[in-house]
Length: 344
Image 1 (cartoon, rainbow, N blue to C red):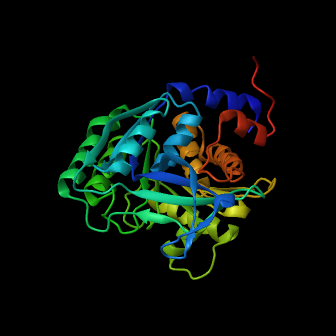
Image 2: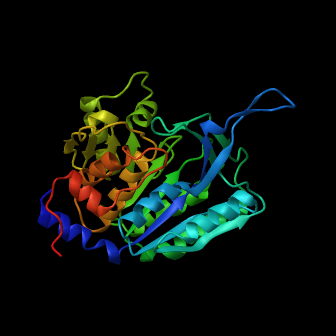
């Protein structure tokens, strides 16, 4: 990727309208000051004193944050939260995101807000250390009324989007935003608009998804193949090519320290090596930054190989952000790619 191509693609971002449908959760960071440790008089157990609380959108919300960091003009969000304190905090955090449109995001008394509570021990001797996480999820099937509402949102808005991200974070299929009704509507959209970039990312796996652009990490690829060992570059290229040819849609596989593999419907593949590490890393959120950058680049007319180059650079930025679920700006991505600064 040279400076001219980077400039041409990124110049489109402010005019893009990108939709994100999926499980938006609340990332709640509890900063614990280790110097204020106490012992409970009543129980004799340790007391951790929290001196700061940070709330930000997580899961699909991390994709949203990364799109905003790229300067995307409009980000349509389709999803839901609960009518609870976590939902209130999540909606408040989402409302601060530049370019966000929340008409498709609803609060429901039938669901609990998906939340990750992350205690961070801060001792001043190094980066914050995350302790055991506390999760709040839904373990029952999503009510049909909510499922229909999300499907209708895709039907109503899909014709106006430049790209769509599907983010399935629920551990049990059908308990989050991405239900069979939603996937059916996504399949209809993919047929009606065959050139619309639709990028799907699913924690439980993409096996039930229609033929759209598949994005997965090497662990998810291994599960999809029924493999018991990690998938390397050569195997990832082979399997991604087969998948892309079968679905006639592009495939992207992230390989952690081995970089990113992309495949085209004609079976051609490309491998982008990971950028060198520059210190301590935290991989949380790296995959979501990849998803966001794929959507932005493909929505601007990039090839899958070009989009993977930008996404790989974004991931390199994010993994070096500690104690938070990070984002990557165009300035940071340009620096990773060692491109000259934009002309003033």
